Amino acid sequence: MFARRMVYSLGIACLLALASAHAAPKQVMVHYMPWFVAKPYSGSWGWHWTMNHFNPDTLNGSGERNIASWYYPLIGPYDSADPVVLEYHALLMKLGGIDGVIVDWYGMDNYLDYGLNEQRTAALYPWIAKAGLKFSLCYEDATIQQEVNGGYITSAGALTHAQQTMLFAQTNFFDGPAFLRWSNQPVLLNFGPQYFKMNSQWQSIFSVLDATNQPAFFTEDNRLPVGAGAFDWPPMYLSQTNNGVLASDALESYLLGFQVQGGFWPAFISSAFPRFHDIYAQAGVGVSYGYLDDQSGDTLRATLGRAVTNSSTFVQVVTWNDYGEGTIVEPTVDYGFRDLGIIQDYRRQFLDSTFPYHTNDLTLALRLYNLRRTYAGKSLAAAEMDRAFSNIVSGNLAIANLQLGGLEAGRPVLYNLSSNGNQVQFTIGGYISAAGVQLQTSSSGSFPSNWQTGTTIPATTNTMVITAPVSADASACFFRIQNAGL
Image (cartoon, rainbow, N blue to C red):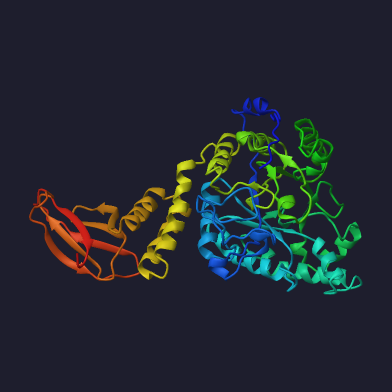
């Protein structure tokens, strides 16, 4: 680990003084990397976990795999195509006060790992939609240069190829109801531009799209005339003049300058980030871009505080899971749920005072993830976990907690109890054995008492809703359930 640290405030006190003021409503998006391949799911370890240097099959004394990062995912190194992981990520974002993802996108070509990344981007999209979140793309046009260099396309055909890429994006992403829009235009970011640097080239690239899909285009740092604006990014190039450490005054100057410049554009995206600590030099794949200290969460608090209170159109959190560069807000062994807790707090403080979720609620996503692993291939449990997912997304956290608790304890639970005087109705959930459950009744509820088994209810993947009559002259009636065969 680098020993370098720095004092870093970026006006924290000033931002906290704005606690009573709320910014204009804006969506908080998170930059997402879809490129991870993990052996337990895909049969091999991808480059982003190994960088051809680290071996995840070896474990340290804590049982952690040896991966290309200073930081360790709370669920361990994962595969970006694994639906259990994608569900976990979508739920964390929903509970964490994030409105959606901006996926780092390399296009659809079967070249290098671009096609693999596209498959994983496509796998993420429905989970984001199921969670009621938004989806956007950040197109890396640097891929064009790589494809030209490798002979996959020619420089003469590069612009036509980019047009085909945009048509693919229109068909597979832009037209979807979950895709992020601004002024009724699909929001498209570009990490650069790095290959097509002329405004006229982008005009030509977008000319093949439908009139309803001309994008709200955002480039890095500077706006092209064809675009709506730009987004900022951790300016690690400024660290090269200060022994590889990004100084607070240099970062403050950069962020302020970008914010002032963005005020003259139709729109701009303000980015927030927790730290920067890449592992490229240690992996032998290049030199380090520099270092930005976490400062016990104050780096994220400062940059996020600026982003949610300035006049930006959107907030971009950089990033969800770039483990190679250390800009991670998803839960890690190192920081737990802290960074998502900061996002929750700032959403409630500056954007939405009614935002109901807190750090403890984030554990629901982890519990569901662990249960998916425990009950893999068990259809009855899977159906109940699907219902728990829906309850979390809908904000019914108390019921989701009961469902997950029953699955964790291996027992059925009762919830959604209602009565109209002549009958009671309730739902049976939690863990249901293949033999079904027994419904028992008693007039006293004491144990052991005169519990009587009324019926055995067959197991089903459907929601088990039970309606039972209640005698008008009975002083009390108790119900309990247990797994059949016990």
